[in-house]
Image 1 (cartoon, helix red, strand yellow):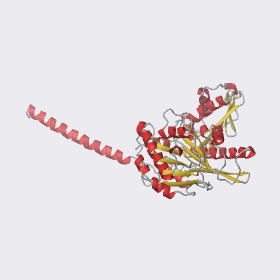
Image 2: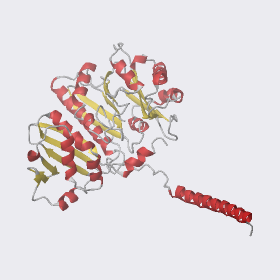
Image 3: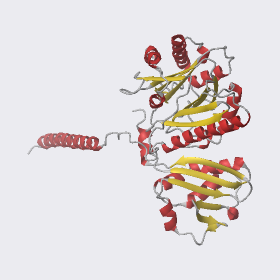
Image 4: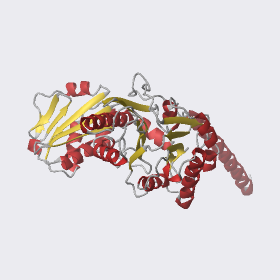
Length: 451
């Protein structure tokens, strides 16, 4: 055969090989794509309250509505409106993030304004888009939404508070919200608080609610609260939105003091993933429509305790709905030099990926707790440190407890609710922090969040 014939045949064979490789590669890619599981349906957290959403008392002077606006989600309610009676006292705390959203900045500014006598108030919330890091366009969206509500309800714009939660950095399609304001106003009713809680949800798997009743002078004082939060949860206010309503007669100043006194031990003591949100908002509204006298004296103490109880219940529900969570965990630190050091240790343990993954794997790896204490920056002494799993003494005096058995620790880790105790043996400082485990599901949820 001529030399040129060999060259021609070689070229032909190479083309055939390339085509065969391409076909094989295509088949492999197709098979791989087919093998990728579809996004998992949103299952309710195994740590959710067994009885579902609680029966919350009607709060005189508060009405709710929710609609489907299609801000990001389809076929579900994603905008809620709350109308509050004239002269409602408002208080709030917010994220301290330097990149906080336009809604947060607007709420902070409005709470500092003088309240016109007899003015009503409102809160409007959307899910699916946080309207954060959206510049002047985001500010304009806040003005458009709050202005539309103010006009529809006949109240000052300075008394309309807004929140947005969801994806960061995308312009809020506020026209979808303003187009639904008339429907929201028409649907307002006092018994729709659960529907409003559903409308706030993003990666949440269940709506969150809590309530309390206090006996005041001359009648009952009722408190009802709702919250959303599942991921991007860490102090400074832990993405989380909370709205608490009461019919108490109380001044805005007194209400703000109570709220500020209790936020650290409640919402600033939870962490899912150590990430602080741009949108965290906690608003408390007191309509003053209870038959009871103004909150003061012993009643004020009882009311504040009840308010704190509602706050801690909602905070715990946020952790119970932590993205992918299967364990509800209290990190209980005692014996620190002071409360500040106790907090450093508690959060170091609660936020440690090594500790959280060990808990997810039901592995009693107490060495990871030792490491977290050591990195916390708090004063610690190896020979004074004590570690417990619930009532099980694991380590003390610089070494593992000689009576500790690994199988006991492993059995304890099988539970859904765990307490990890750390005593530093140095002083009277203490702090409890609540967290959850870190599972594969957390990665799946956050890897797919925008897609």
